[in-house]
Image 1 (cartoon, rainbow, N blue to C red):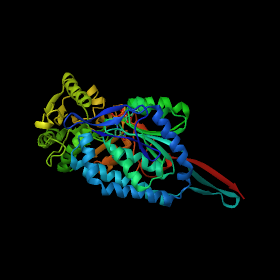
Image 2: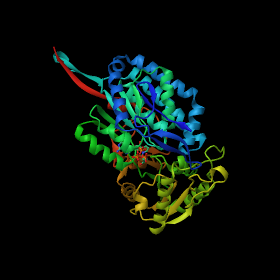
Image 3: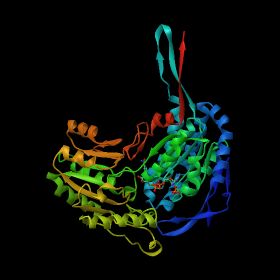
Image 4: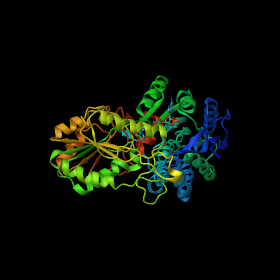
Length: 480
Ligand code: NDP
């Protein structure tokens, strides 16, 4: 059975304690590889390596760092097929999705930040006759990057690429649930000639390998994506140590459909924004609010399309949805469907597991599920489910829909469907979300701000925001 290794000081290493964890293939429900069950000892080795590498890496010119990172990007591109297969096997997502979204985006994360550092500029404040100010940015040193399981390599590289590009050395931990592509990336970094210690990847559990990263005094900044509860814990640990913190957390995103929308596009895109990656994207619109005059028509068209979505083994050419990531997660999602029924919801389609045959009979498959008839304040409509479950709720006015949309603790993303330009901008301004799409969903430009408000996080990723997070700025004032 394949044994994943840690990547420390430019070498692939066994965990110091020699212990391993099982890694499951969710499409079959079977263990297919082993992951290092790393501890603070492994994190210490990684921090030591990163500290040792920092003077050399941070002294390189932007062009030199850019060249190495672009080589990694090129290797991700050359290995796209192999990485997509690994991602799909590890996570349960359709292979097609991994090939067209996850891996290309991991490649682009590296090339985007590799080139961004060649074009960045810092503010200069001219005081005329008396002098001037300028901003001097320095990399922070050793930084920690911790990522979740839903878009494994995509989100892992979204953090480490800006950290490395800005001149830091990184100690990173991917989710223990989906470690494989981060491991393959370590091999590609070695091939690309990344100097030893610049990037270190320690595998293992949150408490075992994540905790020693966040509490290590030499790790000066933490960039974390994951659940709100974990984010809260990380903030409690790291904030008193005055570490820089970027927290990208959960969501319960509203998808708001006005009667004057492009109906066909709104229906089609809403199916995607509800069920892409089995609904396990933090940006999925899990609460669909529909203006009452088109509620029944929208519901009929939407449910019809959802019923046609094929759930199947991730490798299947016609599988639109694969397996959810783990048995525990499947049980959590099914538990929420039961809760929705108890809260008075009616299941319009789905609501059960979607058993597969033969070698896939042990996999974790759930039917795409659409529920109506729930109060917007109930738990099903307030808590993050993070699976293939959406609710439909009618509304009568802009004011009412904003009240319902903003009623949760979260504030990550929102989608607005309308052809009324004034209303589109009014609702965008009124909705408490950090990312808003009008008449589209998940259209990404890597230069833009990315992140949430309220319990969805602190800080923004993306573009120069991410690069600047990984620097310590100084204002330098000179008087003539
Ligand atoms: P978790 O919070 O459970 O885990 C995220 C990462 O944190 C994992 O690598 C986990 O390790 C690690 N971790 C857990 N405990 C600690 C700890 N004490 N110290 C350090 N690290 C720790 O989230 P999930 O992996 O379940 O991901 C799903 C969540 O991520 C959802 O809430 C989703 O909304 C959110 N998310 C947010 C996004 C955003 O951009 N805002 C994007 C994508 C997802 P391990 O896996 O080994 O336990």
